[in-house]
Length: 138
Image (cartoon, rainbow, N blue to C red; front, side):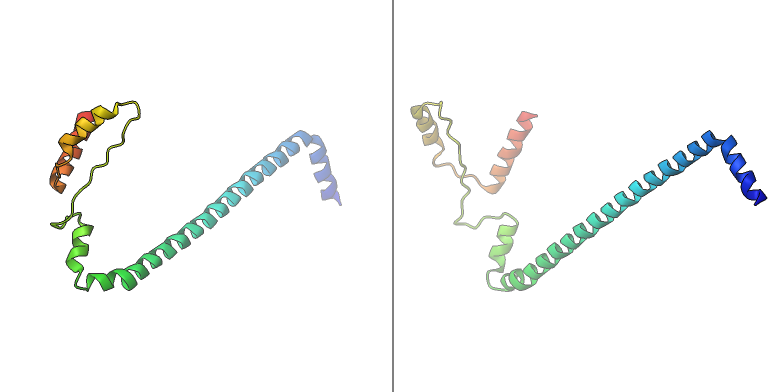
């Protein structure tokens, strides 16, 4: 009983300090609760992202096993590898598409296009032209 009275007298004398102490405890517990909730959300997001990546990998493996392997082991193997590596066959051509500006005159476009109709670019020439155009922009 005597200890209880001493404790109550101590609280009455130092009430402002006790209030600040409770405020600090409450403040840090709120911060701890917020951090815990944010960690929980990031863990949930990581789990969903990982499961999505796993399903995408499984689909890619199934596509490779069930679809691509059949073609890579068939008689068209060389054809598919050429297209995968952007190598054209002897009968294939690259087509360049030019977007016509409606403000230009039709006659000017026709005269410009007549010069380029017969020009066929090889993949190396096309790549070099692309690099040249990008280099000029720099």
